[in-house]
Length: 216
Length: 216
Image (cartoon, chains in turn red, brown):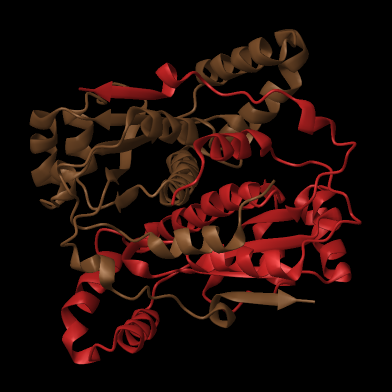
């Protein structure tokens, strides 16, 4: 069984960066549980999952975040507001925690995974060096973002990815200071207002021939 | 109409980083057209789409890429091999090309979009400064990757994201030297071999409580 092609295409056409959410419409618990599954099942390099997703439902906190989000109304009006944070460093302790998880889930002795662990450590301390590790982890979070935006569209949940935010202030307000996690972006989720004029705008994309080439 | 929750969940569980592709199974043209639609419809900051997707079907070229991809067999055995490349800089000419597209699609006079253009230029030349622009465009490409991996799973097409490649050599072999585009990653697409032992491994993910927090 696979998805109907027309349905996938129409879902992607239906999606747009929602500017005005209907503040009275809330995502059901069953749908939200699945959104969290989508985030959790996101693939990542080495399986490291170097992220945290902070679902901010508290109204006062959303109001505090608002001025540090260019006053975009989505912060207040969306049903669920997810802040994406990623690791600013990948410590040996973190990698060990992950290896322990692999060992538990796959019932493989930790001792047998020394090579795998060394490969990861060699990579995050080598090719992906310290100055670039935060860019590496941020890219990973964007895999989650892409999967979320597409999955939500299929569920007919509207989204708006938000990069225009003061990451330092977010870290402060979300209690990330002093942890290894740093805010990178946010995604507002909910349902479009019938008055969102952006819903009617034509989608602007380069032609396939401009962005896709074939070497046959 | 929205997707059946169970089907979305099962599709994400079905997905895994495919190690062994069945080299005899090819993606149909109708499916492949949709994969390209998925890539094309990916959202990006300001709508800039700072990417190119190079579909490498030429066997000789794939063989040349192989040693610069840690000899991962997916490069040769997959049905379709997509290399992701992103802009290393966002020039004013590029932004103008995009504005022209917006103007064409939405039938809005270019002159009326000066403010929008200035906002984009101010951002790519300011907050997203030169040293970081390549990280910015790479993140964008990972939205496409996330959307692709999830969409393909729904289509029951297998994928393997590949970051372990020599980007310089790829740029050389793909003729990107002298352009503004740089290789960032690749995704092999096709169908799993019935002998891929990785297909049977348990998926390893942290618990929701470890990666998702709620501020109510």
